[in-house]
Image (cartoon, rainbow, N blue to C red; front, side, top):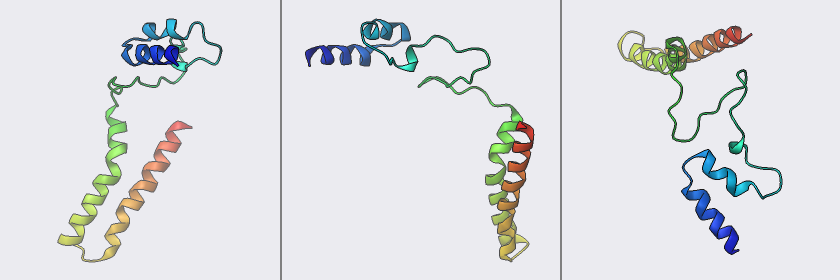
Length: 107
């Protein structure tokens, strides 16, 4: 138990990956994936905790905000021009359209 406590303290105070490697060197497999070196160029990279997310291109930002914008537009249209509940289908239509565009772009 004392060794576990010592290692736990060292793990919680580690700031860099290189600080963790010696703590797991004498332990059997499997080791935490955070100890692995940099990934291959084609592999997806998961941002580390506390690291800023990679910047999104403007098209991705537009896609991610299309449905909320459509919802606000539907509310505005409902209270100003069209007093029918049909305007609330607008966000659903936009969601389907954006989903089709994103899936088409990936394939």
